[in-house]
Structures are given as C-alpha cells and as structure tokens.
Image 1 (cartoon, rainbow, N blue to C red):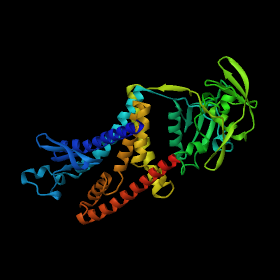
Image 2 (cartoon, rainbow, N blue to C red; image 1 turned 120 degrees about the vertical axis):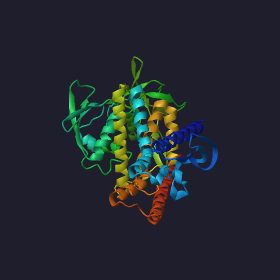
Image 3 (tube, rainbow, N blue to C red; image 1 turned 180 degrees about the vertical axis):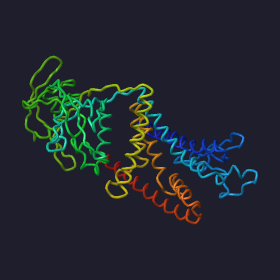
Image 4 (cartoon, rainbow, N blue to C red; image 1 turned 180 degrees about the horizontal axis):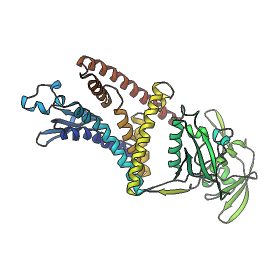
Amino acid sequence: MNLLITLLAFAFALGVLITIHEYGHYRVAVASGVKVLRFSIGFGKPLLRWTQGADKTEFVLAAIPLGGYVRMLDEREGEVAEAELPRAFNRQSLSRRAAIVAAGPAANLLLAVALFAVVAMVGVREPVAILGAPPAQSPAALAGVQGGERVTAIAQAGTIQEVKSWTDLRWKLLNAAMNGDRLDLIVQSPAQTLQRQIPLDFSASSGAAESAGFLTSFGLHLQSPPAEIREVVAGGPAQRSGLRAGDRITAVDGKPTTTADALMRAIQQSGGKVLQLQVRRGDAVFSAQLQPTSVLVGGKRVWRIEALLGGDIPTVKVERNPLQALQNGAQRTWDLSVLTLKTLGRMVIGQASLQNLSGPVTIADYAGKSAELGWMAYLSFLAVVSVSLGVLNLLPLPVLDGGHLLYYAYEGLTRRSVSQRWQERLQQGGLAVIATMMAIALYNDLTRLLGQMH
C-alpha cells in the first residue's frame, strides 16, 4: 500500500509541476501573439492527443512523463507561410522572447507562493520550538543552551522576530547560518518566568550550513518526546521489570530524566548494569529495576530494553490571515530560492557536498511520506519541489530556460544573436552537465536506498 501511495503521489506531483511550467510558456506565448503548434506533457509516443482553439493547437499526453515542451511556430524548425511570419517565435522582439522563456520557471515560483500561502492560511500543527539538550562542547552548549528552553523570538540586527513553531525557528536559523549571521535566541526555561537571551554566532559556519544535519551538529535540535513507554515486547527487559504502555520515566539512577533521548542515552551508557527507575503511572509514582540486554548491530554492541519509547510532543497550530499567508508564501519562496542557489554555487566551487543532489527516487520517497501525513504536508512538499524546478530551470545552461535567457542577454548587449553553430556546441556542453548532475543524483538516491536496506 505504501508503494502505491508513493507512486501515485510522485506521478501526481510530476504531472502538476510539469503542467504548470509548460502552461507558463504557453500562456505568455499566446498572449504575445505567437502561434503554438503543440503543448506536450511528457516525451515520446503520444498516449492521448486532441486539438483545441482557432490555431488547432495539439495537446499531447506522452509516454515518458519526465518533462514536457511547448512547440511554437519558428522559421528555424521549418518553413513558415508568409502570412504567418508575424506569429513566428523567432520574429518576436527580444523582450517578448525572453518573457515567453522566463514564464515557465516563473509559473513554478508563483505556484510555490500560492501553495505555501494556502498551507499558512489553513494552518498546520507544528512542534513547539523547545530546544533539546545539546551535546557537551557543541557550539550551542557553549553558548548557554541547556535543553528545555522554549524559543519565543529571535533578536537580530536590532529587530525582534516572533518564533511561531520549531519549523519557523529552524527556517530562521538556517537562513542566518547560510549568511554567517550573529543573533540572539530569546528563550524561556521551564522553571523560570523571566526570559533570557542566548547569543549564537554562525560567522564560521556558513560553509557547512547547507548540510542536512548542520543544526544538529551545532547542537540545536527539537526536544525529543517524553520518556514514555509506548509499547513493550513480551518477555523483554521492560516487561520483566513491570513496565507497561503509558508509563512515564521521570528519573534514572536518581538523575531526572524527562525525554526519550535522555532515557536512551542512559540505556546505552549502562553497559548492561541494572538501572534504578522512577516511574509515574497515572497519579502513582513507584520505583522499578531495569536491566538492558545487548545485541550486535553492524558489529557494534548496543543495549536495549525491548520497548517503544516516546510520547506526544507539544504542538501549536500556526495559521495566518490571507494577507499574512500571501506574504509568508512569497517570503518562503524567496528564501528557499536563495538557499537553493547558494547551495548549488557552493557545490560548484567545492564548498558543499554533491551528496546534497537528489534524484527521482528520493523525490518519490518524500512524495509518498508527505502524502501519508496529509494534504497540508503534501502541498508543502509540492511547493518545495516547485521552487527547486523553477530555480534549476533558470540556471544558465543552454538546454534549460536560463540558457536561452543567457543568449538573449548576449543579444541585448551586442545587438546580434548567438550563431547557430555556437548554440549547438553550447547545447552539447549543457547536455553533458545535465547528464552528469542526473547521474550523481541517481547515485545518491541509490546510496540512500541501499543504506536504508542495511
């Protein structure tokens, strides 16, 4: 069932994003007076086709759904009747040609704004921005993060920004890290009523900020769920010690232990010794003795209690009015576009790992997972991929929209177009770059997939 959901979610995402992209080209071409011959979703053999409009434009759904195209009347692709020459793409002004080419990526970016805005307006439940305990000597620990603090705002460059949720905080921290900024977290600790500030300095971290685990390595992560027993395995150490589903661990060996992460660390550090637990069951509090058992995982000995840990984490519903939602959608689209470009730029100069490239397998996996979480998560996923598609198509590679815009920029500066011979050469180079990127992305996909299998 999960595989079916993944395939359907991936196919729907591709269909929507490709259609919106090509419709951007099509709509502006028609508005510019250019005759459109074919609007195709997919490549290869047509599975479905029909004609529409006064120009008898052919609409096609093709067999290979990994892209699409809009074919316009153009003297470079065949003879054009004299009466229709004014409607040929190549006869249009430079500004019109540039607008038609830019309309595809622009449509994807506008779609992302709309999707982010819908999610923000409807509202979603997100984790409250409560910091987990950082590793000793991590930058966050050295800055004063202890764990359990709720972040209410960020102070930066004389302005204070409210933090609505962990998702909101994470986004703000990543942007600050990418820019190498300094900021202060305004936090409130569980046992204190007064707020305090924690200074964070990302000036030396901008080169590593694009990696998936950057914030965790910095010592900034969401507080883990409560140290609650969700399920016990029959005959395992947890059941033998008398623990049941719903029990909450409050201390281990006399040390307060409130999160699942802290409990798991205590289990791993036990070395198999008996742990003295303080347990809360409903209104009752009692003691229990628990002796972890060991197993070998990848040649390494780990300790387990044969129980599923973790309770519900605090959440807050984040929603905005229509104007705020639209502003939020535009801001998130802009921030994500900049982040994508910065990451790509760092990969080109070797400051970021090529492992950040993802291909269709990873995208399909995320499509399925987000679909299982609900419509709001899936719409957010669509928005993120739509931004990526829009930004990638604006890269100055000859086979992409950005490559054609580069030609037009040259034409605007020199008053002459790039020769057909040079266009062919540059297109071959662009194809080689795209093929290399796709190969790396697919390799990363397979590496992640095989890693999960192990």
